[in-house]
Length: 111
Image 1 (cartoon, rainbow, N blue to C red):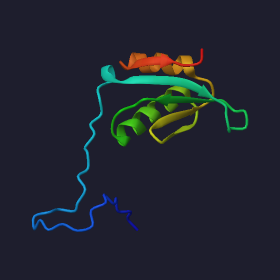
Image 2 (image 1 turned 180 degrees about the horizontal axis):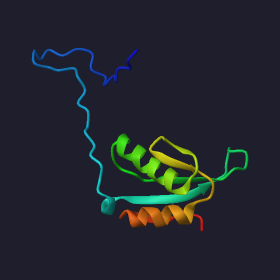
Image 3 (image 1 turned 90 degrees about the vertical axis):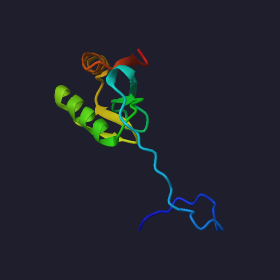
């Protein structure tokens, strides 16, 4: 079942009115325009460390590809959720090096 985004419009007297909601098309910014933040999180994970990469602006497919690249280079598991890349373990330094090599601007948080 699809959720309909209710904009508050109930009725319109305009015969050419289109109730459809315009979707904003987001293109992925180039790596030089991206400002990524790499941080470590242990909260609500039973004490296990997870490296999180935040700040990616772009389409989901490009984020998935970047996450897959990082997981492969580190040889660990992880996932992409809520516009963040989660990598199992403390790989802040290695992630920042890999992202810098690909041309991203990276800031490490918590060191």
